[in-house]
Length: 386
Ligand SMILES: Cc1cc2nc3c(=O)[nH]c(=O)nc-3n(C[C@H](O)[C@H](O)[C@H](O)COP(=O)(O)O)c2cc1C
Image 1 (cartoon, rainbow, N blue to C red):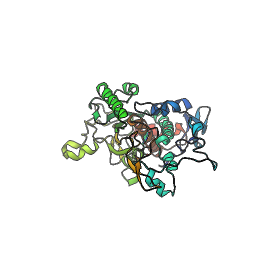
Image 2 (cartoon, rainbow, N blue to C red):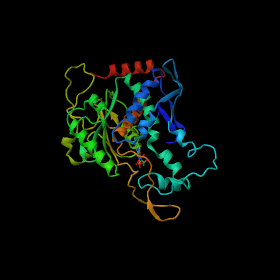
Image 3 (cartoon, helix red, strand yellow):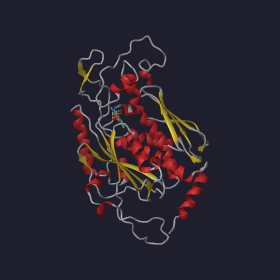
Image 4 (cartoon, helix red, strand yellow):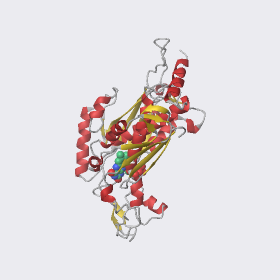
């Protein structure tokens, strides 16, 4: 992270989540309603737990915005946890004399065991509270701020579900984003959508869970974000880290990704075509196997990123585990849990990608006000040789 920096705080069943963003320009129109829209998109999705209906997340803007415009100071956001009321005792900030149930049978696949040992705890609760993907609500709020900024430059970030379990959407035509937004599983393909929903129903009935793959597509990205000159300035590397940091994401590929390993060089790259008009800003490509990034730099084609999401760890029919107090075999801990989060993970992926791109735009075009950044951007676009 360079210019656009952020940090989140908060436990899953604590008072709430807090986010602080630093480095954004002044003069950007920003409202709580805009952020709420994206928080709702994260909460939707077939296969989420009942908590999603309970929460109805809303981020309150605490600082950094005046009269509907950012003022260049840190933007802080607060998302209150509506479940706090029921959890006040278990998550009490003050010392308590009440007996609180200890969780001591770690779930394989979660941070439970390693986290408990690392932080010297006799209880898994403090680990699972922060390891929980509840934290990603704060990231989606931050991502909404980043995408509000990107919109000023005509950059749009989308996500859709490619697969859930072994049910895959047909690939080929560009996704219909309006359909995706209406789909309970964020799938562009009607046939695959109903198979995915059925698979989620079956998994739920069997006390099991499902993973899958989501795809992120960003349009309107100018040539020249990121750089080839240093490893940590490569845009592909930054995107991979940001998307991989989403809980349950276990694989990230850009463009044709892993499929490139199977084909010859003559078939793997994107032929540069002559311009139709000399004045066209972009060099067209016959294909986009590079997913919009070559040599760590955006090349003006849509950025395409895919991520593999593992099946949810907490199972109603728990996996075998060990009680860490007695050392004896027992079932892993269970509490209310999602069945499939691939659609929500896509929305979180959008947020992480928007954050990386907002940072890259600020790195390339600088500026302390939106006006200054837009002026720098426009003069750069004009300077691209035609
Ligand atoms: C939107 C979203 C919701 C999630 N909900 C749950 C859940 O209800 N139960 C669960 O066990 N894991 C859930 N996870 C996954 C865990 O947070 C994740 O697997 C765990 O923290 C271990 O991290 P790792 O899988 O990245 O290694 C969710 C992930 C995402 C992205």
